[in-house]
Amino acid sequence: MPPPRKRGTALRQQLAELRGPDVPAKALDARALAALAANPGCRRRAILDGAGVNKAALAGALGSPSAFGQSQFALTRGNAFEAKVKADGGAELLRLVHERLDRSAEPPAHARVPELTAIGPEGRTARTALALREATEAAGEWTLLDHPMLALDVAGSPAFLEPDAVVVHPDGTWTVVEIKSFPMLDGSADPAKVGAAARQAAVYVLALEQVAARLTQESAPAPEVRDRVLLVCPKDFSNLPTASAVDIRKQRAVTGRQLARLTRVQDIAETLPEGTCFDPARPAEELTAAVESVPATYAPECLAACELAFHCRDRSRAAGAVTSLGRSVRAELGGLTTVSDVLAAARGEAGDAEDPAVAALRRAAQLRAEALSAMAPGATAPEAPACH
Image (tube, rainbow, N blue to C red):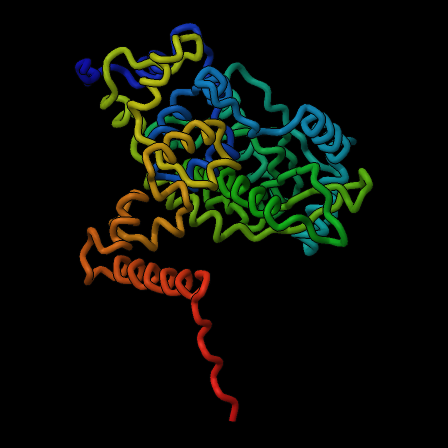
């Protein structure tokens, strides 16, 4: 076994070595962060996302290509719809914000749209913070920040996030705007898609709260990030925008708590063998060994959120892990972590009879045996209860 990594190596250098010296880092977006927060126990995803590894390319190199992600058609349609919503200086977007979230304010007849371009993500983040401070101090005006850049500390590593828009109200409060291309039919949209958008918006709210906390040291009162975000979608089957206010307090609390539970990326990196690299150009055997050196926590929900889900599912099934059956099943089985352990407990070959999970499995096995016995050829059907 190769020796573990030496401590003291700079985190950025460690992550570059893990990614591959000639491989550019893949930005960690809010969608990936929301998925990571939904499975905080998965060290594999934490280190791969923290190092900026392209998991789709990695999955293809491992022989388990992923179907996860949006089609090019969906991306093109979404970009066209977003451009329509933001046309004319964001007039329609600001009208929807006023109508759905802030009717008491003056209608946004004129709005400031500051320039946010700068060199690199750090420069854009600093420029966004400056624009937010200026907009907050400009009382009585509407301000639209188009694709601002926010930074969020995740497991000791900065993640740069780019929401569709942030609106600063005349009272100085901030609102996150999410623009999606799925339709809103008769005022409501697909609950699963709305939930995913809410979790993504919660990540942006957490990042904005960090910006507000830094501005608190420079100005008073502290800027307030609203806990209702604006979800903008096409109306019915048209390309006309409509919007709904979404309360994300629950998603913000859950996401914040889960992100805080993530193991620090540096702590994971320092446990890996020297020379570990996730470059998809590496030989398949070496790449497989590198991926398997980091423990994963697979669940069926990963299929809709992670590019490595098929690879992890195959390994989970091969190991007989009960997590492949779902988190709810895993929670019900207590200390029984493999399918073989579950079957042995059900047959009475292993397990503590006082364990509620073991007792329930044995009772279920008994009921199954009785049902199969009653269905066997020549078996006498049980008498029906007498009617009175």
